[in-house]
Image (cartoon, rainbow over all chains, first blue to last red; front, side, top):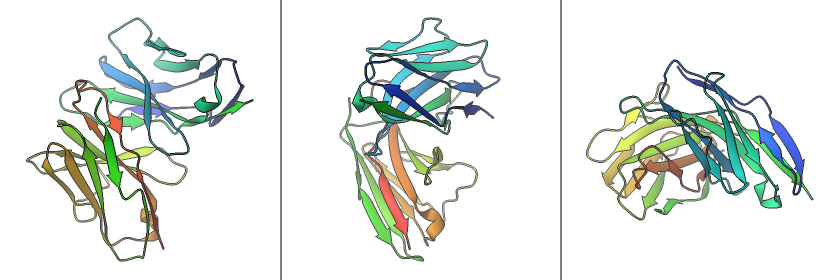
Length: 116
Length: 115
């Protein structure tokens, strides 16, 4: 079974600075998807970024980028120019591409605080 | 992209009762999912709901406790039956199929407290 590990329960960053959230995963598969979701206090899960394992290029969405290291099974999220609205719980998630297995497996999350 | 909503947004219920949570998407989607997020925890998939077939439940979740309906391609319900305080959680629905089969988009969640 796949597992996702987020080793940082909490992180903090100053406004306008850069922060990196860590995620590692364990799988025997070669083709899969990885995601970062954010969950603000409103509790809605919002997709931040997605990465397809067969693509070597790291995904980027505006101020959010990932460092995808397939051999190391590492998928970190970098937030540049942090804003107060970035404060949230961030979850890393894995999804297999095999067959009809659409299940998302989530890490335990990292609570990000942004200090003004 | 499609908009997803859930009702109710929160509820407080007595033990032994049941609550039905509704999930509505404003366009037709292939697959819908129900997750549970216990206090301070991550999300765990309860079941996958496909239109026209029985829901597929994950290990540890059973149909008698969490019956699910999927009458059409825009709507699903999850019932939490015979509730106990351990059922106090946030319940979230999600969908895939809005042009990107591989990505799930989530509703705002239902916060359930069982007394």
